[in-house]
Image 1 (tube, one colour):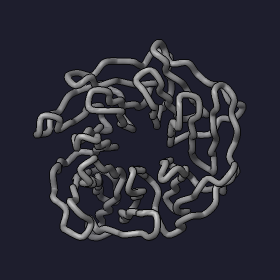
Image 2 (cartoon, one colour; image 1 turned 180 degrees about the horizontal axis):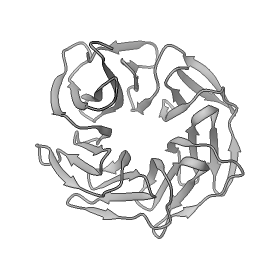
Image 3 (tube, rainbow, N blue to C red; image 1 turned 30 degrees about the vertical axis):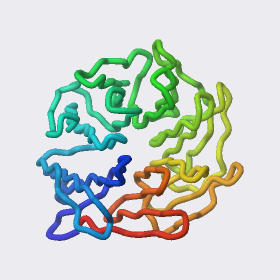
Image 4 (tube, one colour; image 1 turned 60 degrees about the vertical axis):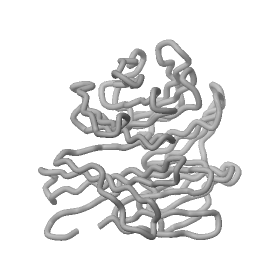
Length: 280
């Protein structure tokens, strides 16, 4: 923190062309003012380009494989640069927490009061039927195979109609979701809450009492990220410390790299070693 201003890396993404982007949110110590910047790296060894900067709170970013950026603001607006310049669209009056997509015309945003909208390349379509409460995570493998998760152990699946809740006999506040296949999905949350869903059955994962925020797959392995405890690798049904010094508030697995970010750190793992980048 400098001069009472903190900067936190909250989202990271990479497109097929190899360019990586990071969302950095700056705020004063009283959290009364915000500034959101998106930096794009051609390589981690070169200085990034600033491609978005607004005095607002962008809560999350997703970068598609085509290189388009999709952003959600905490107060209900979304932005995208699908035509090459950023366009703002009012989506809802509810707060938005997470944005994620399958491709440029299947992008999803979730938030409070069971909010879920889909961007079809032109407009945002409400698909909140069946959801409730604070929804913090969404993922999937196809447009008719989606999952989401949120507070109080809320987990739901979308297969083309209203969201169908999957009941689990526990009520953790969940923050991350990752779909491995149509049947298998992983979830993580506060106070060590990590679990796997296979169809309609569930299995708790043996995890330390960290708060987990992200899940990613890289080179066939599943990784769970925490902000203070580092990156963990799933081995069997247990999370094993993998990179304790890394910050895993957000992660992105690609064919070449595992990207992690959080706090003042952005890092990339290539299968043998780690490379860090500076955005401050």
